Image 1 (cartoon, helix red, strand yellow):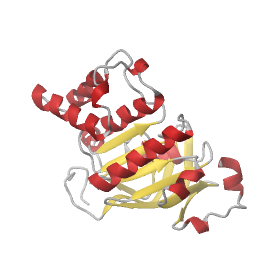
Image 2: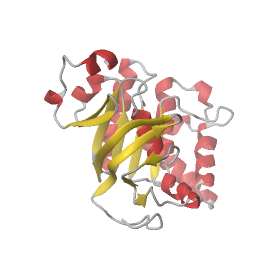
Image 3: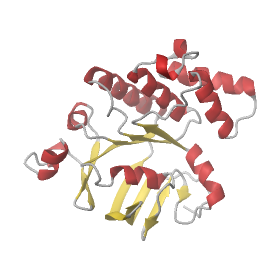
Length: 249
């Protein structure tokens, strides 16, 4: 890929991290990280609290810096991206948060319209149409006029997923999207994410502590452990006697 001004480049790798040191607010948390996400692929990031999982997510949307190596995401070279180009990167990256981060004084419709306006949409009729489209995708057409406090936890997360889909991004980053949900609702959200992944062919990186999900909805697994990121292509490679599983699962 070229420098940060070539967002439309079509590459096999939607995300490519090569020998990069991932940082958080206080320093390096993961050394010599290598990770690839192909177009339309789903992968998990697992690891104990503070192991660097969420730092990878924040790095991919340019909230955290990285040192050494290279990172390319959604068509952008993050080592060369200009500050003014970061909003364009984020339009190509839908983020699903554990704590929802909805605007509590706005309806579902207003929350989604606000995001569209902030990402460059101008024509109100097209904005209204897109809001209805994404709410239909997550099964919440009848909640368009509700306030966040009137929604269940699962419904709030569906709104967050709808928000992430607004600009039809090729990449979805889901940071503990089921962390605050009960088991039944967790299954509903996972089925929705898998449906979106299958039908929209979007690449998804999902951070989770829930080991059961990696078995029930199998995909490639990366484990953050002892300052390193390790790829476990098969579930059998996850050593059930390992301290990492004892600590996080």
